[in-house]
Amino acid sequence: EKKLIEQHQTIMEDDMQFLLNDEEKTTYFCGTKSKSRNLFIPRSIKYNAQEYLVTRIYDNSTFDLIESITIPSSVVKFEDGWCKDVEKLIKFEVDPNNKHFINYKDEFILGKTDENNDIFDVIIFARRDLEQATIPTFIKKINSYAFSRCNKLQSIEIPFKFECQTKLKMH
Image (cartoon, rainbow, N blue to C red; front, side, top):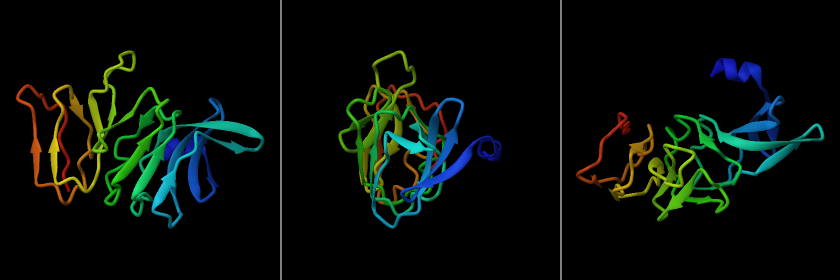
């Protein structure tokens, strides 16, 4: 993590923090200092007359006040641990043009195990106010911290054929 920060310039834009990759003209979204409970992540930002596409959501603890988030079509990766301290996030929108992630029944953000496939089979994030969760039968993987901080969660129904490929981190 420290190496990544040293290799990229950190900037603030509209109370949001980004790591710029000058070589690829892309940026990581790192968090926000805004007190707003609603977060709209832009598809791109401009810096020094250059456009940088927001492609990743970085691991950062400044999501702790956020209750709703909008993910643009440009995001291709959520870094492991991005949501480990996210306690209040209960509403999320994923741009319908995003080919990497979807909002599944307003309960989960889903991703793919194989980017060349059209099947969304990874749980990236579970809304934090879930009391009961049913893992869809097509799910192959649950990312670390997907259910972290789901403090109201009473039960998780897991299909018989499910193979857990990761340690679930519940806090």
